[in-house]
Length: 354
Image (tube, rainbow, N blue to C red; front, side, top):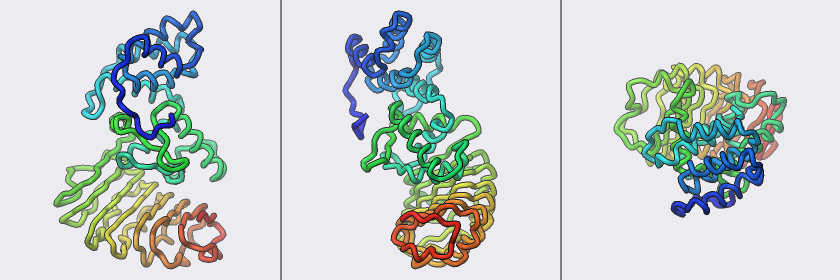
């Protein structure tokens, strides 16, 4: 798909719908054993272009009648979950496209994309950092292989119409309808996601418990009270973006009860120096740390994060990396825009990316 936005074009007549479906799925449906059932599958898309394209792409590589029968049964028989942002007739086709991905890695990466803000340009390098920290990629021996795997998975998701081309080269976007469906899926099972964006409230958090969440993405514009520590024994990923106009600081014990955290992303604090909460050194399972668009002063405490493998300080203001970084013997990559290679001299474990 070349477009960056999915435009609503209305419902197609049955003949038009079949022409579009056949064009997207390929001439494999001309096989007499598949033609009849393929037309039935196309009818279940109710003439909706988005449904037609996602289902066609999902079934494009499936050549057996059994696979097509399963798809037809799913479209006809699956219970439709009510999601305000997703038209009822679109849920089943979108869910089928996700279910037919086949690759658990592709499914996980797809769900991670739903953690970003609506209409975001999502960087493959950011997904690389998150995916590596979460150990999504199997059988990977080095960073370049992981990067290649991310590119392949994103192509699979774009080919399935679950992601689209972003505004920048190699970046991707997620349509708001697809994102709503992804967040619904992400609320199922053990990988329970919480997304709370554009919070403007008196206090944080407002929930009574956070114990069942494994992934959290929070964007806030205002807190009248400092965020108190929250108990998150299952939390593996935390994306925290705080856009304040006045100085703001997390309490020193904020990270006390996040012992399983593998990925931490902090971005866009107020225009003031960010003091690190002392409890960050308690994150004994942290593998990926992303600090974006921050004003940083002393970050020597990072030297206590001995499990850290990926460190990103892109877009942040920092005069130099502290010598304590040399204690991070597991560090394999450091992204740091604006720093010269000499700033990393002596850190043999660091692979510099400008």
